[in-house]
Amino acid sequence: MDLFVANRGQPDQLYRNNADGTFSDVAPDVGIDYPQNEFPANSEGVAWGDYDNDGDADLFLANLSRTNPLYRNDGDGTFIEVTRDSGIILDRKYIGASWADLDNDGDLDLHLTTVESPNLLYINNGNGTFSNEGDPFKHKQRGRRSRQQQRRSHRRL
Image (cartoon, rainbow, N blue to C red; front, top):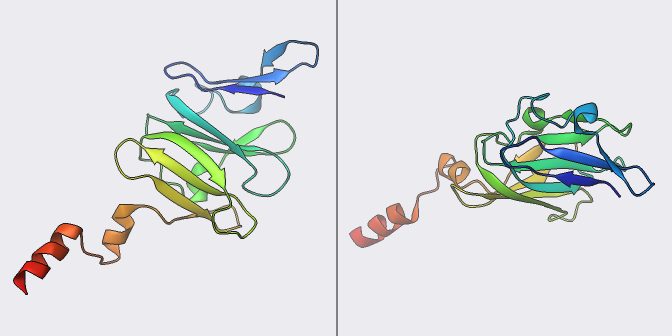
């Protein structure tokens, strides 16, 4: 079993088990370290899950720097950062993440705990992208009124 260490303020580390009682930091070699990539080291939480159902554990990093990378495991020991293509909002301070098949469709969905707003839920579309189903600001854009607006309307009646 390998070990990932989220280091707030320092580069994250992925220790590969050498099967002899020792571990080696391979983060620079596999594409998930800073400063090799563009994500500042401010990691708070880590969630491993096979979101693309290819049999390899993928990695999401909850991060206070408003850049929260999703890394797809390529199956050869390396990772590719796919956050922007996935549809996950980058501009939030996340402190925790977890994977679960919440809609019972056979693929993992992503729940994120934020510092600034209510938690978010991303439903896996099964094609490498996610739909944001838990963003309160998204609902405002759809024309839903806030509770305060609803109370004002009710008072007028």
